[in-house]
Length: 185
Ligand code: PRP
Image (cartoon, rainbow, N blue to C red; front, top):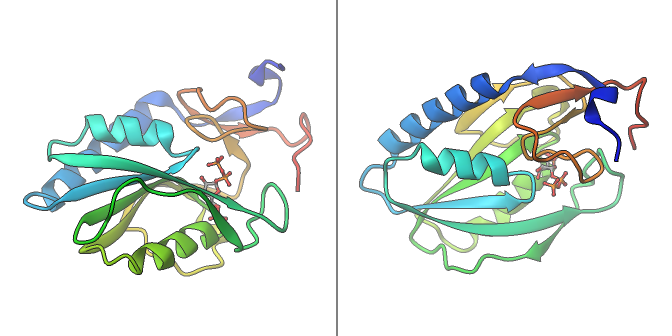
């Protein structure tokens, strides 16, 4: 396994900035979800780091659940919009106040599909919390109620986001140097 320093162009968001922003999001969500029945749904796998830090900053009672989806069709970096559920929720969301927790929204196709699908299960409310918003790449019009950072159209990794499935553990968001690594299209 290559040392990531070999292809790290730079750190886009360092650990302190990430943690500070997540604390702010946690405070905001805690204010908004007082007296609600909050269920956080993490979309695996990228959202895991964000979920666990966000939970620690929440002061309102909540439960968690997980789902996994895979998009297929175009390639590694591009969603086709054809999304398949590979792991479904364990719990019913009917009547619950659902907050989807995502690491990154790129084209928006994944979250658009998940929102449509979950709406049919009649939650009381359904909102989206995304750590990173790669807004330039948006193709589907999706609402983001809580946004950590808007980022440029660069290939990023770390803090839940993988590079060929590795490096999700890094505590910061880094930018891949396109001259040092082959980025799959
Ligand atoms: C990433 C991310 C979102 C999706 C965003 O997941 O976690 O689910 O892509 O892309 P979109 O807005 O263009 O649909 P990925 O498929 O890389 O899986 P992973 O979370 O397991 O790494």
